[in-house]
Image (cartoon, rainbow, N blue to C red; front, side, top):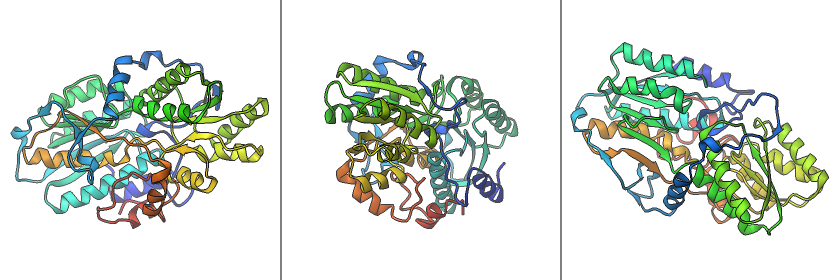
Length: 403
């Protein structure tokens, strides 16, 4: 178990300075791709489902139940899970098997989750949250889940899977205990969990970003797609959707794996720019976006039409340059939802069996509002973190430590 001191140490260990900012992909995947940048060869076909893409396309315009002011509690109407058998007036011990805190997206969410925990502990809903960090390792997370099961004193399990297939049997073993199981961020290959919490998904990201580029480019224009690494479901589906839309609209797209290394990103674009014009840049995560923009500056070239992410470094550079951009999101506020699900379970309330959260990009018209709302936050912070009403705001997020 990571106690408070250990948590601070673990967070600090992810850093190259006094913050916990680091590079990496959402969903807990490490950005360290072996061999550095390379032209992408994986076609991702084993991850692609046209039916899933069509469903997520429809969900982009779905009506979400609940208050827009609390998007972390909103959901798309669908099957509900009866949790009345778990109702209790006693604080619940929560056991959290986390994939990692190895990148800025997960670090921002982890801070938010702990502040939500503090609030629910004060309200007497949760007694404690025992957390084990798998550090991006399947075997470690499997052992962590089995430890919680054998320990025998968890009232509820929360699992943020490191990967999909490998973690499925361990999730099923947690379900067999008869205790509620909450899966969030990425899924597993079983429907035994009490609820599966996630934003709309990778296809929605790919559709949002590719359609934006198509709308702002001409047929025959070239887009360089900067991908972190192969074999990660949410990243593969982002690119799978985007690639299809580019092909259908006559956009020339070449994709590279970058390892999320700013130097490699800059090298890729410099090489492409020496060969000819690049009109667009597509990214499956935005924490290397500044390096991509700087490559155009270094070559004295016009800025591209570009999609990044709601990380503050991109929003600030976008504002500074005035380029035509879009900031897609993989809603970071989802880190609040598992603990709020525990609150509902303790009250015996119904909760969505698949809890699909809103996932709305930040447009140029909205950018200024998000910059103002997140003034003082570090570059590795995510604008749609959703923690403004929690204890410790804004200091805890600015300092990037667990209080």
